[in-house]
Image (cartoon, rainbow, N blue to C red; front, side):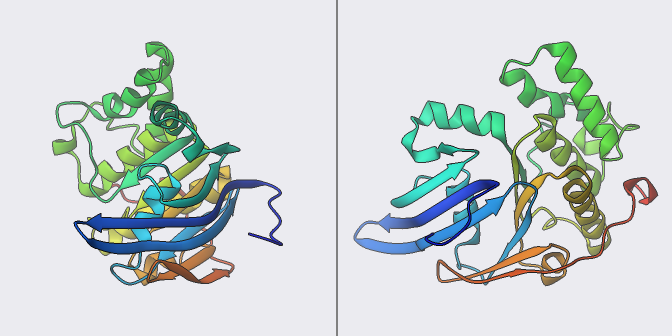
Length: 248
């Protein structure tokens, strides 16, 4: 990443390579990839199916190993750590939002949000306070006692966003966060993510196949065949206030 200014960098990836092997067959999913994301940026990653979008997210977050290169998040080299240390670092500095909501069916909204906090040693009273605060922040203060089956898809995704943010992460990774939602609800979820980025400076990296979603994000990266082929920054329109959204 020669010549790039790394001041205020939260994520610095250099020469990242990922190869999948099945028997004697090798598929190179990421090709010597460089990427820098600064604190407070919101970045969308787009590209055709098989271009390496989800692999990129998984490697940059340390969910998958890499076959070459270096990834630093918040000043820490992820792959110089042991697996246990990397897992702990991820739990304290990263939040995740996936297409599948991955909520625990028998838990209420507040219990789903507070669980990761309890797992990293947050005191129960503090975990409950932070979970309630985040649910209120995403517009679900009136639904804290409801289970996932009692909520719409959009409400469930709001719970996953609250869960991702309750630990006050340095960075949130979102893989197709609107993929299971209709267009109206997808727009509301993007309004929420954009507001969290613009008003609170939350760093967000999201993967999407939807050009309408990509158009909402200030920085758009395009991938093809495991390479970054375009990196564009542009002005975007600020979202409406969350309180103005219908809660469907």
